Length: 292
Image (cartoon, rainbow, N blue to C red; front, side):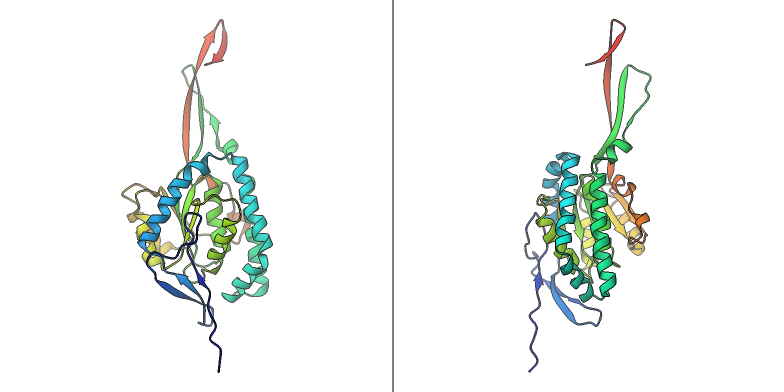
């Protein structure tokens, strides 16, 4: 008699914990041959709403960390992923990749995390400015995180696309709610375990698995989500734009090949930043200029 394999049941990641979906529903993740490889939580509207609450609570502490500390934490993510490289390679192969392409995807993902870790304490210096004004003031402009960002992971990549869209968002001090790849979700939920072991505060990253058709609307219409990031999903751009109108969410849609090194850049961070301008008065005392 052929043995029935016991499939692993993966949970969602929200608030720094691994709860079961509120709906109690699951769906089967399949390999390239159509064989089941895992049970995945089928997230619901309530799961999205809970995740947004966690992301909002975590935002202040995460954005308030020093840029250098955020850089250290992102580098720690790369270290932990490096130590679990073989597991991610196995999962990519299970989902249809060849061994060579799986190895390249994991190593390139690690390199991309290191790349954004290096930007954490540099993008403000490059993008900030001292502005000329006609009054006796100093006028400074600098970046601030936009807030809670909804990230819809690319559906044509299991790990590399997820890393490429998630890292610039959190490198800039934002928190996020991420909808994982629906058909290739293994690396997303395993990456949640990497985040959990990497000093990333609970709630900064929340990962929900399930059917994209069910999860996009509650994420894009949520009034406490400040921006949406989507990539390689051109058919959904107009729909998400319409959902985002009520609170004027910023929507960034990318149609790029994430495997190219040309598609790691400063602007992927600054796309989810606001410009804050500060005025500082100048006092002229005895012909000398001073501030107070």
